[in-house]
Length: 235
Image 1 (cartoon, rainbow, N blue to C red):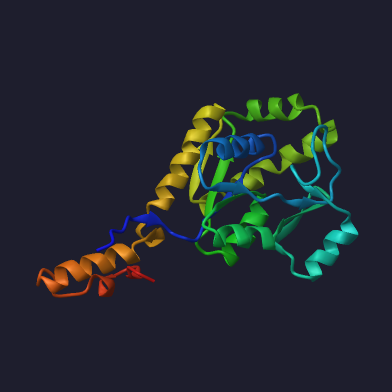
Image 2: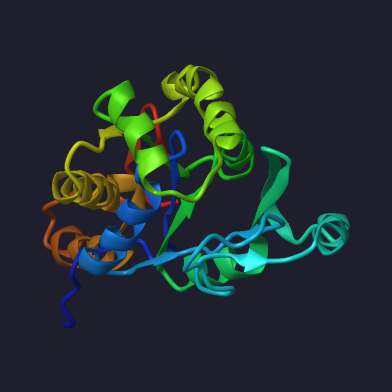
């Protein structure tokens, strides 16, 4: 008889990261990709101009506002929002194709985009990233040298509104140290993969049924067992 191993679901998870500008979400994503297996990053489309060092198709898909609006009409975005005068959106096709392959997808999007994702993808995992202090956040925004004083002031004015959305998220990571923050992200993804509803238990359940039902060990098939809150174990 063939043996079966308990494995994670064949369908990937959508992991949403949000947080104030300058909190280090991009760095956290990059470190996560380096240390967590079966994870990819969904590149967003945006109408803003590239910052120094950013490359089209790697950091973002840089497109015109006219092109972006046409894609909205064609329903090509899983979510989209206008942020600080520019449009940002998550291309639907790439995300769906990765999830079907069993690969988890990281999204770096603002709180409005995350709210839209939660409405469309009920089992998406959401993580809010915070700075250790307000002063540190300001120092990071100034230190990266990519925004004017007016832009920095505008971004800081939105921090309180963004933080108010934390109760709607599943997890919080305080990014005081990028190595520690990356370990926290890895722990979140690992824990979510181990949830019963995400585990691929069908083969194992069949094997146990065949072995113990035939031997009189079980009177009720495992595949018919139900959790009172979650319903059937095997969906």
